[in-house]
Amino acid sequence: MKNALILQEKSSEELIGIIGILSQEKEAWNTERSQLLEIIRLYKHRQFGRKTESQLEGQMGIFDEAIMPKEPEAIKTADEEIHVSGHKRKKSPGRKPLPEHLPRQQCVYDLPDAEKICPCGQALTHITDETSEQLEIIPAKMYVIQHVRKKYACKACECTIRTAEYPTQPIPRSIAGPGLLSHVIVSKFEDHNPLYRQEKILQRIGIDIPRATLSLWVLRSAALLSPLKAMLKELILNYDVAYADETTLQVIKEPKKSIESKKYMWLFSGGSPDKFCFYYQYHPSRAHEVALTFFEHFKGYLHCDGYGAYDALATRSNDITLVGCLYHARRKFVEVTKIATSKKEGVAHQVLNYIKQLAIIEDEIIEFEPMQRQRVREEKARPVLKSLHEYLLQVKAFPKSALGQAITYTLNQWPKLMNYLKDGRLEISNNLSERAIKPFAIGRKNWLFANSVEGAEAGATLYSFIETCKYHEIEPFDWFRYVFEQLPLCHSDAEREALLPFNIDPEKLKR
Image (cartoon, rainbow, N blue to C red; front, side, top):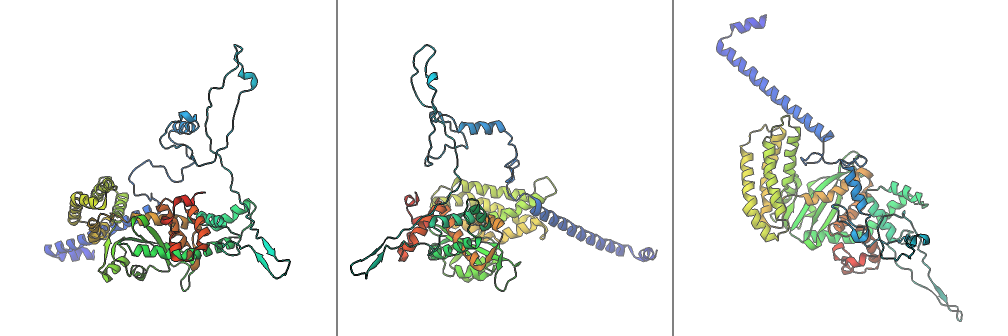
């Protein structure tokens, strides 16, 4: 009643002013409310939604192996076609003949003698064989190598005793041979099989090797490879195109840091196309000094995301040009489309269409030489980038909204996003690093953490060579086994350098 009397005493102009203030406060409240709801939708999507950035529907989930396919008869037919006669084998899409290098065990089926007689009374004549193949497996088996060293003595003077030399082993006085060491390493770091599971697997075939021993083998194997890893770093720094990324890692016994605190596995890669390599490096922090130290003497282009450490690197050195990742920016607009309440296509969809045009151009020129690739980009990609930039500048969005943040990030990164046009060797994204760091992230979900700094650093060394081998289409197990046999015999850097994955004749790795 009192407030009503006060309002009656106000003039019309004052009342209009009060209504305006209340309207502004209501509008501000509605804006904050909509932003809060957007944040909630975004976090719900990140927690429970699909992680893929693809907009395609109907893709089979990663854990749907036991679900009946939509066309079971087609799958059954495709499986049966693998077992047709050898001279009539059909080329079915997605199905390949069994590899020729696999050993064959032949089972011959013949007619009984009674059935080799025709009803007319004449003996049947063998005309041909029908051959089909079936894949079988022999469970893993271990064997023991007995090293017998012949010993001789002089019976005349009884002063001389000589024993045959024992071959140098990767780990002296260890029961682990090169093949077993390779198996343990590849099982953990490529197949994501933690050591405690490997311990159980070995026990099932009658071998009792504690996980502490397996861990020691991993540490000593990584130490043996450390001189080769240093060579990978030199190859990256001596070329003028490089890549960088980082991801989190939990290390239990990190001095002066709590278990819950974040530690990081950094990934640096580069080198000439024929000697391209990956270099993992553990560090307890995400500090700028990590990138600054690694690239201290680097000159050239560095592919990276928007993390400030790389901006600090370019600020300190005029010899480094940062190349941004357009697909990092794309990811933010994809999130906007996934949390949108309206089904109508908006700004984010339009931006994604621009980026799709750029991706199509990249697909068309992927096989081109660098000079030709640069010319096509200038002709086709630059106009699309210009249109995208002009479109982003004219869009009005709340700065704190998901769309506003996506636009702000993209515009802030724009000079770096344009740099890939400067050289045909450069890429529109940093996906090469992300693909290489993904196996580490998958493995981390299995073995969860590193117990010590030494374990994290050993993992960095072994991941470096696994990813380098995979890039050059070399089987990591074959490479590790060969190197563990040869490395103890090397006495110079030239001999060690010849063991790098891209320097080895693939024929030497075959057995």
